[in-house]
Image (cartoon, rainbow, N blue to C red; front, side, top):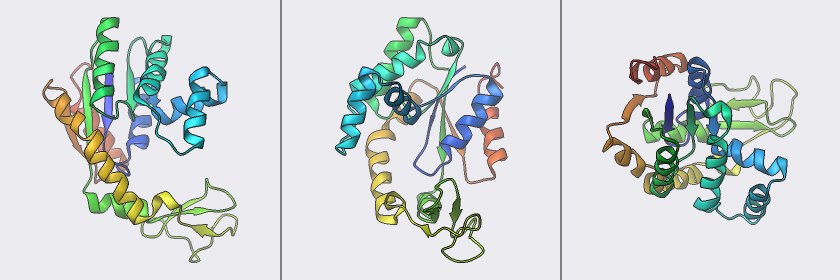
Length: 218
């Protein structure tokens, strides 16, 4: 199965991508992982990305597409994959189509995780991270610490990251609506899109996604 997972920030794409990939026995390929892998391996593309990110710039489509093409050419992706964070815009979607046609493949499904915008803001803006250990994560509503502002695990100070602030979240959502959301209509015209209501327990969302896949994938 060759699947693209889309949805706004805070929709739970990373969580669902990992679960679905495991259930379907296909690799979970995320843009963030591609960037980090190329940077850590010191590839030519990785060095370019590292320089761009260090200066606060946006990684150009051609670099992202090149990294994705290289990853999709790896043996473990030969029988399928689940893409998370790629394609991010129409240009990248068309590039992916070209890669697949060249390889004699096609996408089987596009899963669109749907979460109300106010819930997205609530999910992200409520995050609190421990200064001592960023893996210690809490939420002001869904997983509050026992003592306000203090990590339950190590007594470190809990803080709100800059990119988790409400105004930043709404800017990220605006970018998503402008750049990424159009690929849903692009793929809908190809009959590939299934919209998955994602305001539910994780396991329930996973099952909804599996149920939405073509018969041979479920």
